Image (tube, rainbow, N blue to C red; front, side):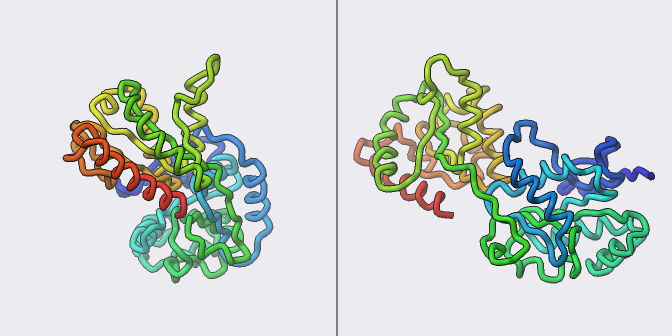
Length: 323
């Protein structure tokens, strides 16, 4: 078996071809495995069986958490394939670029037409056992002309778009993310206490539950409990202040995990500005629309003005959970 080393565009290449015995000869763009992935054994087995026996169009994972499930599947079952190709599918142009990058490995160096790439794959001369994963796809119409016409067991689509749900080949992935995770510095605990009054009122009229580390019981392993809270977060509320941005644990652990979940699973990131800070210099966070303007932190507002911000926040939280 030949091992191909891929030179991929920087913005697309998430991992190089892997020479592990557990991975196929071509391992294109597959994200790293989440070492904290747990559960979902029934869904992984359903997916394995479906891809082994399915005849027809692409298999689809629909819902929140589909990307993580697809990543775990290919890492577990990579040895069942000769080629696995991961395709960022949020735009049609991204799909075309990815397929064009694959073409030279199929002895089609000048090919840019997706149908020619699919034809070369189905010929199976170089890689008879192959799998294409389309990550974070929009609705079915967004991939028109960009999927093999006779995909059978060779194509897996992950999507949060509900338009796929009516298709016979769709596995609906129930969300394990049900909570609002509040990330804050303990030095800003008084802001959290003021906020909790409004969050409790929201909980009375909705099913939205809030989690913060003040709920950790004495004697519990706090890191494990925080990890569970992060895994259950459907939305995250960040109380932005100098204390927040200066905290190694918050920025290096909580925020990193939440941003990964936002990208992979659509977890909503809500930034509430509680004090003036250098928030604008943190591009990874400041790219998200803030609840209140950075120039109008809670510390600058009177009580009735803060209440107005909190009411606006509850509306934003409710919309985030409806999506």
